Length: 517
Image (cartoon, rainbow, N blue to C red; front, side, top):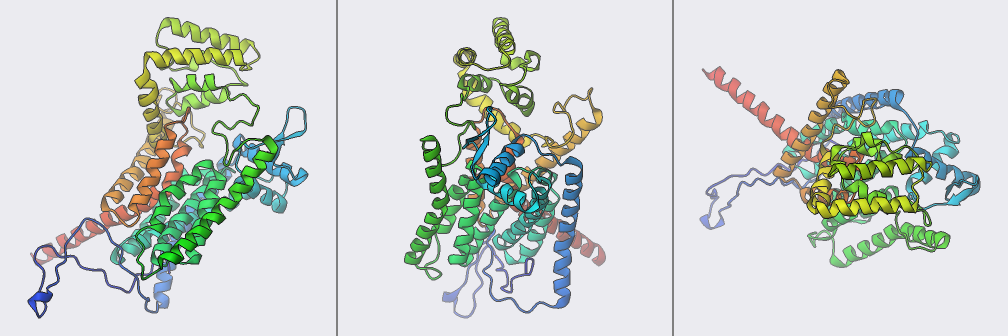
C-alpha cells in the first residue's frame, strides 16, 4: 500500500554514552545525526479493512482536489498554438504521409529535426484514436499522467524517509504536488511539460525501488523513464546523468553481485541508446548531419540560425516579458524599440544605432537577412567588449534567477508586466501571491535538503545541472525550471511533514503541561 507503515520499527537514536546490556564489552552506542535514514522494510502485517479505507481516503482527497483543479483549468485555459501546432503538424504528417516532416512554404512537406520524436508520436497515437487534430484528448490524458506523477512522488517519498515519518511525508507530498497550480496549469495545453514531469517522477520512483530491490523489473522501469524523458525534450538526458550513479554505486553485494549489476547496466544502456541511434541514423539519411537529439536553436539544416540576433539578445534580455515582446517576434513581426528595456542601450549613440537597425529590419518586410544579422552581431560585440562581466556572468545568472522565482502566470490571462500596479491592481496582487507560493515551494525544498533524506544528492545534482544548462539560454521562460518541481515536491513533502509533526508535538506537550498544572 502507498501509505502503509513499514513493520520494522524505526531505530531510536540516542546521543551521549551507550547503554550497556549484560557484558560491558558488548555495549551498543547510537549517535543522533541530522541525516534522515529510511528504515529497511520487512514484510508488512495484514492490513485491516478500516486501515485500507483510511489509506484510500488519505490518497483520494488530494487526488480529487487535484483532478477538480485541473479540469477547471482545462475548461478555462485550454489552447493549442505555437509549439503545440508544431508537434501536431509533425504528428499529422506522420499519419497522412508516413513522413516526419512539417509543411513547407511551397505547400508540400519537408523533413524536420527541430523536435524530438517522443511527443509527436504520442500526438499521432491520440489523433489516430480520437480524431485528427484533436488536441483536447491529449490534455485529458495529460491530467491522468499528472495525477500519476503525484502518486509516484508520494511513493518515492515513502521509500526515502524513516518508517515513522514515511506515511505522513508521503501524504504531505501528495497534497503539495496535487494542488500545485504551476504544474497543473500545463495540463491545459498539449505540450511536453506534463509527460516530462511524469517520466521524471517515474525515474525517481524506479531509482528508489532499484536500491531496495536491485533487479530487472526496476532497472527496466528506470531505463524506460529516462529514455522517455530524453525523447520528449533534449534536456531530459540530464536525469540519466544525475540519477544513474545512485543505481550503480554503493549497492550491497548481498543484494546483487557485481557481475549481475554490470550485465543489467549494459543491457539497459543498450536499450536506452537504441531509439537515439535510430533517430541519429534517420537524421543522417535525411540531412547528412550528425544530430542525436535536436538543435539548440530549433532550426533545420540550411536555415539561418540568426546567430548575430541571438548574441545581441543575450546582451540585455533578462526576463520573460522581453522574451514575449521582442525575442519571439523576430523574424516575422515588428521590432518595436519602445519595448526594449533601458539596459539594451549603453549610450544615446547606441540607442540611435539600435533604432536605425530596427527601422531597416521593419522596412525590409520584417525579414532578418544575413546583412541585418551581421549588424546585430557587430552591435553585440561592442556591448560585450564594453561590459564582459555583464554579458558572461550577471545577465546569465539573472536569467536563471528569473526562471526560478517569477510568479509562473505565463499560462494565465494576466498581463506580463504584472508588477505595474497602475495597470492592473488585482492581477498584480494575484501575481505576488504566486511569487510567494513559488518561494514557499523553494523554501520547503531547501529545508528538505537540510534534512538529507535518501537520494537528496541526486535530486540536488539534477537541479544544479539544469540550472547550469540554463545559463546558456538567450531568452528566459519559467517553464524551463518546471522540470525541477518533482524534486521540489519530494523534498518539500519531507520538510512539511517534519514541521507539522514538530508543531503537533509541541502543542501536545503544552496541553499536557497545562493539564498537570
